[in-house]
Length: 263
Length: 244
Image (cartoon, rainbow over the protein chains, first blue to last red):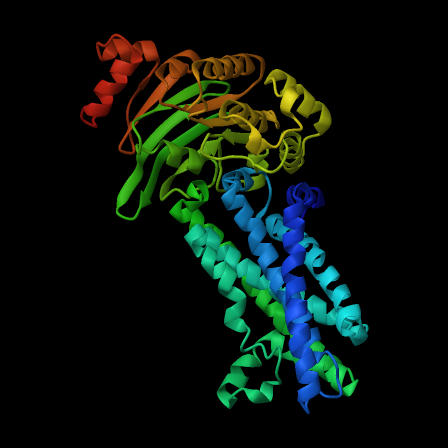
């Protein structure tokens, strides 16, 4: 892994973000809207639900963390789509950069895009709804790492689809996160799901992450084994994502789509 | 760099895009790849760039099978320009050259950017966004990107397509001068006959994935009893596939 190559590819996206104020605004806009929407829903539930009545902002915290996951994944996909839209795709794959370095560059740059959107939204929630995700404390870092790893994995899988099937896979990129949201138990405990779905849901890191977030906020306790489970599951998915990306790359070489990729 | 294609084939579905072609491009020579649309020019270039995996056959660069050498090591010495691929439009010309310069690991990058900008007359729009340039200017920027790493193998796919005669001539003159000064092997795919005649020592005539003839432009014109390369091209393109 050569860091200067990873930096070079990241630089392309940093220049892009810096060059366009509407682009920065767009990155901030959607997470902020989410905070407003879920802030008011959260306020309603806090006043009306016996489950949440002692814990202001559980739903809002879940919304912020879910948006962090969503932005990580979308940021990853967006950077790849930018290459397709700008017809720069072929230039990228004929440059002397390894596939692992492309993955690393996109992974590192995705965090910048994600934080540009998430930090202002998380800060706005403090004065507006009296909710701070920072109340989760040090475990927040572990939760974010797991979410980021899983978000990037989804980004990798969708990107693999873009390489394999071309720009027509774009719609899947936008919809990818919504496929998993119901199973992720983001806003409700896993007990809500029927038994057979609980079995499936436990195979996702999201359940463990959001159950633990609720546990910290409601019970004020921290179960490290839950975080560890979430991390291991995320890591397994990440490795699978990398393998799928490589398979898609070799498939695209077979089909000749790397040289014909366009809008 | 010496390039060799040996019994190269590429099949997409049931159709051969490239069907058993073999050729050698000696070091520092410029070879033209001529043929009608869909004859396999871009597929051949794609295979040489490692973007397309051959169905069978082999490509050797300096006598080494490119599938057995680390891809990145080869790509450091290779570059490609085509009007069908572009550079990110929202980045300035300088930013684009900077990003690709870093990807190619070019030392003294700032100096190299100034040098190439001077050569290709890009200095006045280095700070302009690439998407705001005219097609002639974009074309020169693409060429600058492709020469940034001083490639030893340069693949050009219709480098002057859609350019006005003045800019087209500027680009051809530049390539002509560049290849005389620098050690570079060039494979030029083009539909512009005068361009091929001017720049290439030899021509490969491709039709339906096969090499149907090869030789210098003078040799081919004489062999087919035509007045110029365009007439020769038309005769070959409309004739049978057998090597004449």
